[in-house]
Length: 476
Ligand code: G6P
Image (cartoon, rainbow, N blue to C red; front, top):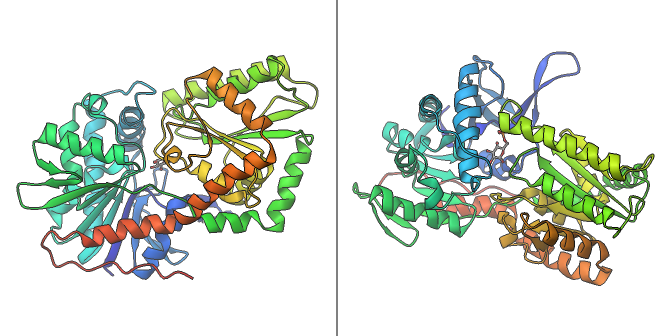
């Protein structure tokens, strides 16, 4: 049955797992995007198109938890050229301030075009007359225009989850014009921050030569495209409820005990990615110990590094670097049963994450560049007693909203050391003052508000078609 709402994202909101009886099955992935989009999906008979991971070519559409999911397969070669190559070896570092050096290869680009076309064709096939299609993230920036060429009747939205870089960096890309034109197929382009939206509009004016005014681009065919900020968020109430369960409270106590009940627990949770600043933060922490500010009996750093993009060379190098650093720090500073850093290379379900957030006194989020960083927001949502400290990079999108965190420049190791020490020494009154203010922000700007505001601005876009309006989500 044709869908009134189609979500197009590189990943499906489920992970492939082996069930207890040994057969393959699916498990909902813990990502926030699903939580946000699920209610709108349900209210609109929505369908989600995405890559299920792996190289299974012939998976049939299926229903999961009331959502219609349409798997789109990638070949081994496409995984290498489109996913690991152009998406994560070219665009990812280019859009994150060149934290690593992007590589430009023509065969990676060719594969990006091919895979984007397949996503666009699939969406065109699934969407009802006048339907809304919402395309997500940097892997699929050509889909909006490809889809518009196939189906001019559709209302098309695009949301970029990562930063959109300044013109000075973006123009290195040999295919810069094609990417801008691909995006301009949408009626509404959403960015995390005002700066990203402004970068885009400026580039369109300079590089493509279209007329622009504030957040609007005027196309020669009479269409207008809006480029605006919609900072993404989390299911704040859901996280808080989870954090308040007995199971999570008990697990948090068990974690603290297993760590030897130190005075303070520092925590980092990140995908193992070179944009996250894990190396620098661990060095800063270890120097506080070697400088004598505190001891391994007083404090421990728990670092969870979620395995990610392990076939990409830069990620392998990072893993080796972190392994070596953790080994060296623990070798130099640890005692029997008291490592300075408790390092976990693994991913965990939401419940365990909530328990870690509850157990931690100081959450340390220090990316060199990050679109938003939802971990910072999740920590705040779980601190329902208005305690705990957040040390946050000023280069994470979340820093725009979480102004009461200890904001740091992750390139400045001494500055980070001071912030970590201040957070370690802060009194209860100071912690409460800061956490209260941040919790208020998160409660007001949750992920439901994010999805609603994007959908309602998209609904206002009128480029002359006879399009259906997306029904708002029914919420309990
Ligand atoms: C970031 C991106 C997402 C991506 C996720 C996980 O959050 O914005 O588009 O899905 O990382 O990365 P992966 O490469 O495993 O999909």
